[in-house]
Each structure stands twice: as C-alpha cells, then as structure tokens.
Image 1 (cartoon, helix red, strand yellow):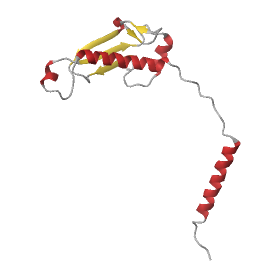
Image 2 (image 1 turned 90 degrees about the vertical axis):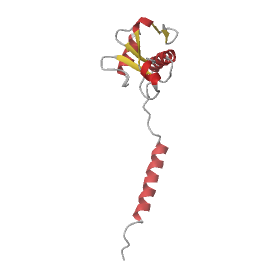
Image 3 (image 1 turned 135 degrees about the vertical axis):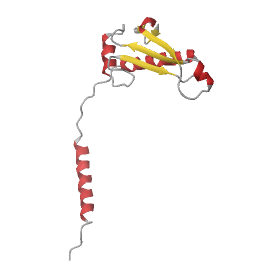
Length: 137
C-alpha cells in the first residue's frame, strides 16, 4: 500500500514492479544482478479519485505514455530494495504534484503610474537615440 495523503492511497496490486538489469558502469555486478526496478502504474485502471486521474493524464510528462501508464525506471542504487523505494517515492511525488490544485490566476491591469513611467522611459530612450543621428550642417 502506497500512501499518498491521508485520504488517498494506492493498493500494491495496482503497481507493477519488475526487476531488470541496470545499464551503465558497474563491472560484473551489472551483468549478473537485476538490481534496477521498472515500475508501471496504469492511471485509468487505478483506484485514484477521478480528479487526480484527469490531472495526471493532463500532465505533459515524459514518464506518462499515450496509453496513460506511468513508467518509472530506478537504477541509481546497487541494492534492488533501495531502487524499489526510490521508484515508489518518485511515483508518490508525481501524484502529490497534481494533488494540490493550482491557484487560478487573477488578471490584473497595470497602474496609471506604472504606465506613465514606462512611456516616460520610452520617450527618454528615444531622445537619446535621436542624438545619434547624422550631423547636418
């Protein structure tokens, strides 16, 4: 059971974890030990609330496939158990990132004073550029 918050948790049966061989340097240990973890989590088939599902599917994250499956590969550590914990933690962080709704932006207008300052600085800058012209006798 992966606890996301007080009210949201994911049963272990919904998370598919498989051990694979890690890539990169590591000598013989890499060739003989499957210490990397490949985590797959199907968003649509999960027991997450519909709001979280929609937000997750709306994310433009490279870890989420077109089919709505989160794929996380953890191979940082030499231990399979530590890689498993890291993959689960990354999944938890991904879901937590969409759990908190973003504040809606209130459109604001510039104040009269800021508009006046902007126009004054443009006028001053234009005057400086005018002095750079050709000298006419």
